[in-house]
Length: 100
Image 1 (tube, one colour):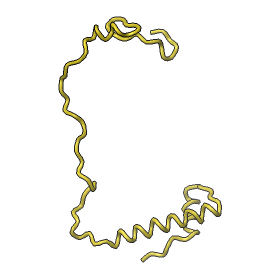
Image 2 (tube, rainbow, N blue to C red; image 1 turned 30 degrees about the vertical axis):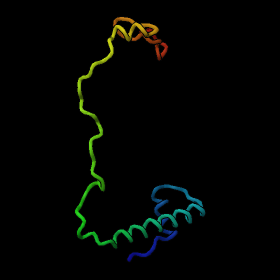
Image 3 (tube, helix red, strand yellow; image 1 turned 120 degrees about the horizontal axis):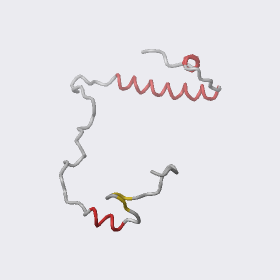
Image 4 (cartoon, rainbow, N blue to C red; image 1 turned 30 degrees about the horizontal axis):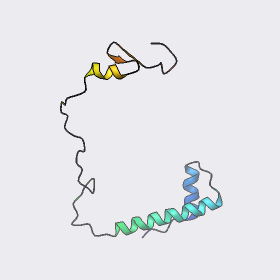
């Protein structure tokens, strides 16, 4: 079993990453990284000999509906309800302040 992570290890990694950590942050991250490594050791100790390799723990299914042609609203009827329409399209104010 490797040694637990030390405060000096965290300071060294922070230095490599060019991070300036306060003493409180070094203590905080040392504690957090030690907990992560402890958990990794716990996982490493599991007997997974009978577990098949997988990329995802859950079966993935496509949530999209099939692409089907369906009846739509009549274009002229919809455009008749719009505040402004032109050439079969909605007419909207310029977004960037420029006229088309």
